[in-house]
Length: 172
Image (cartoon, rainbow, N blue to C red; front, side):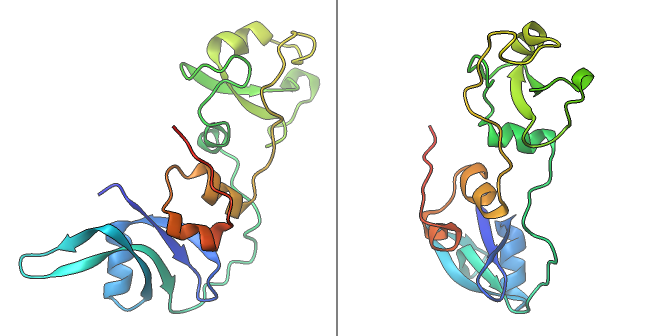
């Protein structure tokens, strides 16, 4: 049951993603309502079947004072970069690279961190990509919360697109 469920706030804005058991419990305990169910699956008990949630909406508004950004972490940089070295395209032995090295006052920020394989990171060393003649495949950027949910949370249900924006990013 590795499916994910989109959790909407009471005003229908995207709040988070959770697993099916947690979403089912919120609906069952009447803390949320089922907005959309999975078309190809149900949850079964010994004597009853329940719709498997795909989207739920909380019954009470949750005030989140600052929801405009995604936490900067190693895993979130990997997700943003699609687990791909931004220099050679490899998917193995990944690490984090500072585009402007820390020894040159490069900060640990969304705009200065990229995914790199250990070989490219070592080859680049204490240089900038230009000095090492290693161009980046994409310019690092800070994703917004909705963009992060939509594009970097793995496979999402098409029914979520109404709440996350219409652009669909397909992955192999």
